[in-house]
Every structure is written in C-alpha cells, then in structure tokens.
Length: 191
Image 1 (cartoon, rainbow, N blue to C red):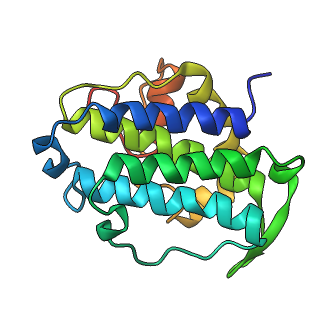
Image 2 (spheres, rainbow, N blue to C red):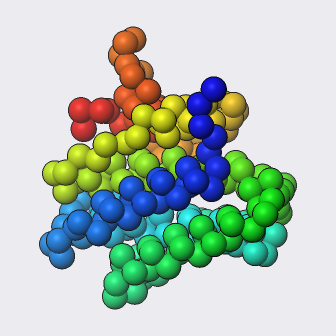
C-alpha cells in the first residue's frame, strides 16, 4: 500500500512547485509552457486552484474556476504562490479537514478528492515549468504512484475529460510510475 494523497502529500507537491518557480530568473517567467500557457499563467492557475483548498475548508464550498487572470499574482508571483500554499496548509491542519464534504456547483465534493487534484496539478505544473526553463523536475516516485492510484479510483472523471490538464497518452509497456503518471496527464517523460 502506497502513501495517500493527504495534507502531507499536498505540502510536498506544493513545495516542489514552489522550489521550481523560486529558481526562475526574471526572463523565464515569460517562457512558453504550451500552446496556450506561459510560466506566469501556469503559476496563476496553480495559485487559483490551490486557493480552493482554503475556500473548501474555511467556507464549506468550492467555487468552480471558469476563468482566471494572471493579475491575481500581483507584482511578486512567488510571494502570491507562497501565501496561497501556506494558507492551504494551515487550513489542512484543522482536525478532520480532509474528510469533509463541501458544496460545489456540480454537487457535493470531498476535500480528499480536491487534495488528489491539487497534488496532481502541483506535480505536473512543476514538471511543465521546469521543462520550459530547461531544468527538468524530478517528480517523487511515491507521489506519482499515489496519484495513479487516486485517478484509477476516479476513472469516471478521467473519461469525462476536463479534470486532468491534457489528454492521456499511452506510456511504454515497461514504464515506471513517474512515466505513467506523466502520460496520464498528457506528458512524456522525455519532455
């Protein structure tokens, strides 16, 4: 049995993302991550998504993110990320917070499921930013494996689309957990 995608897993994934963006030079914030994303828009996406953890625990509901603006980061994107991550971690320290079920526009939503999504998002977006900057990020094997287990239990969400950032690709037959995790999120371990 592997690790679970709990508050500690979120903290580790968020720390990896934070380390990745903290290493960026001023010029690297404008690098292209994909056809539609720059580093700055990727960081804004993570910040807005991670703020849902605090919303869910403190307010008992999750507001769906339909639009976001990189202006949410202000003049210091790393500080904006740090403030959001610290607030989420503080909210998760409330006893029983990850076991809560909260309101969502689509119905009831478990905070534990939100954590699975946020761990996944932090890992793949760290990967994306590191790749764009020419400094590949080593995704922890145990977190990749836990994310694979999480999404296997949520295959209906994967098949419905829109939950994972990209369409899954077929990994090699002998792929390790990190390669399979990246493939699930539409990424190749080779970049």
